[in-house]
Length: 259
Image 1: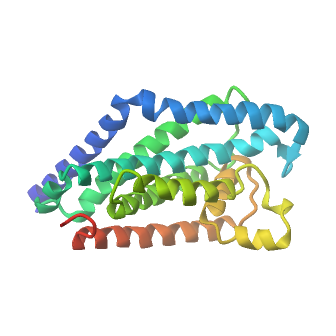
Image 2: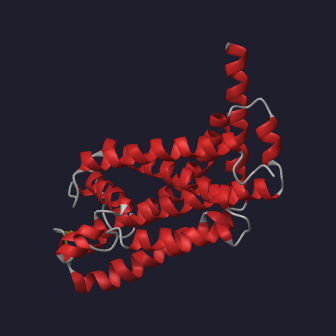
């Protein structure tokens, strides 16, 4: 049994190392551009626009948007790493070698998810370091901050995996990020407090899962949130379980993979 488990760990470690090397080898394309983009948000929205806005939710506007921008970078990069990587494996037929090997499906899934988390958290760390040049950050609740960013990166790594499974071309892997993910992020309270919205739009925002992730992460930093933090963790937990179950089901049935 221990030998079998050792084989599983070696397979998991191999997939993770391969995924990390994949994005770190081309760091000028995977790590630098998102950091530059978020840096522009700091300068334009935080400094220039923020001076006119003043305070938001009881905090300086720059302090208010920093947690949301960090979370945005983690979401986008966790998602994009897995969707591009797994689809490339599917396109090259190399994923079929994994499926016929004695490696369990959950090990394959875990390897790709951890690879996506590694890129998302790496970009998040870079953005956090950049934010220190614009504001003095103090983390009010470190455990909540770490927990929510880890769960969020897991959720969107698995979401990227599902997108890759159903994608039939490289164009398909950009449809969801462009028409679903990006609008949800911008409407998730990154740049504003939901309290500013009319009642109807506050209700609409309550159906946006990213709204809960951004605000819980902001609570971890600032100690203030527009949502119930415990309820947000329940929502995150449900998404993790549902997406994990869905990913394993797709792998088990070879949906979009076996032809």
